[in-house]
Length: 188
Image (cartoon, rainbow, N blue to C red; front, top):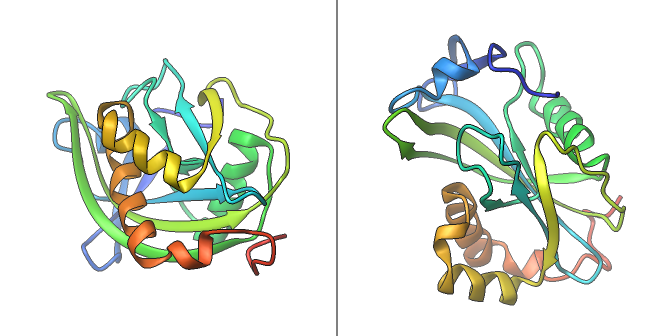
């Protein structure tokens, strides 16, 4: 296990100022409490995005398809440390990651749980074969940006809400720089 229900999450205000800590379970109860998070998008040299299907044991959005990796920085950990730690824990991968943007969102899963996050989004490139942490991930696949666009259009209900929000913004603001990783400065 790499994630624990009593793990303290970093509570923040809308300007990303740290205002306290709350265990992961409580931070996601009901409408949720705003906390710091990150999402990673790792592309291969063919320009395909590595997607993960969330493990069936996840409390929120189990079995949904999502971006390569997402989680929360730990108390006393920099965002840079957190993104590399978690990519290694979930997928056994390391790569250079570039910050793209930060945004706030709220997504209600059911009456008992939600995500309310101030999320930093990063992208990178790697052809490393992932090693799946089965506690976090039930399946992996790579899709071209066009194929992901088409699938989200036809079956939006199988994707996590944050992936759909982030992907729309990546496609509108960063598509040119992420179309291929062959000569990208994101390559490790």
